[in-house]
Image 1 (cartoon, rainbow, N blue to C red):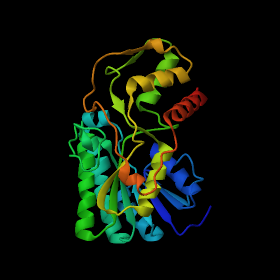
Image 2 (tube, rainbow, N blue to C red):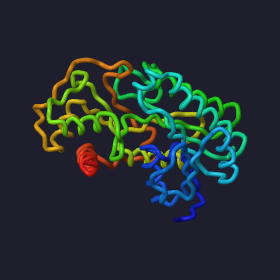
Image 3 (cartoon, rainbow, N blue to C red):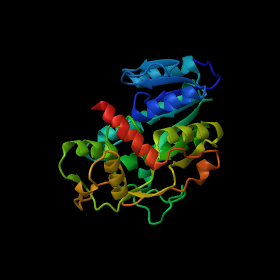
Image 4 (cartoon, helix red, strand yellow):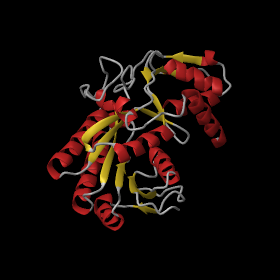
Length: 307
């Protein structure tokens, strides 16, 4: 393990994005300190890993001991549907947690740069594409509203306490290891052998960004971002329809794309179309590397190894 002068604490290190970012940062030569409320399945990327039973009381001591250059908050619920069913849970795992993180940094490690993993959900359904960071925040789910609150906390702690804080508005994240959302559902439905039924009408679109590209953008932001309470879009800047994604996953699985049927029903909290303007993060050196065909092939290959 390289003992780098750059030390990063990753809160939520055992989650999907936490694991991807930890691996990327470790390979880039940073000293990675993982923090989560569950044990990490992979110990190798970490200089240290802390499995916390009470993050409020334990994070301050971790910051005091480690004095990290950076802290990334990748913890909390990442499911819009869950936030609608259990808004209090979503609030506690996002707003309440991030408030605690910021206050512990203020008290224990005020020189640490803090990056909050926000979401494109803060935009809701925009009236214009591509989506720029200065467009209105109009969330349509508790998940989106709570991400807005966290961004406001970032601005508060920068303005009042002088902390270096920023937010990354991540669009539709995917990659090997993600056990939910459309790629996961499609692969399971391919195995079932019946009609592949999906919600919506297929014209819905997303800006899918691979986990490794999110990790690359994250490092660009930490090293070169302003950290004055601002937010940055993290995406590929390419819009692709759900119908096209479905056909690509089914084709990669070796199944007949004629099996795909759309119900026409729309889920609460889901926007119709997304495409990001990534000019701000690109100006910091970010260049997406994983195309959608490569990403789909990787995901299907990983899924097959599970079966």
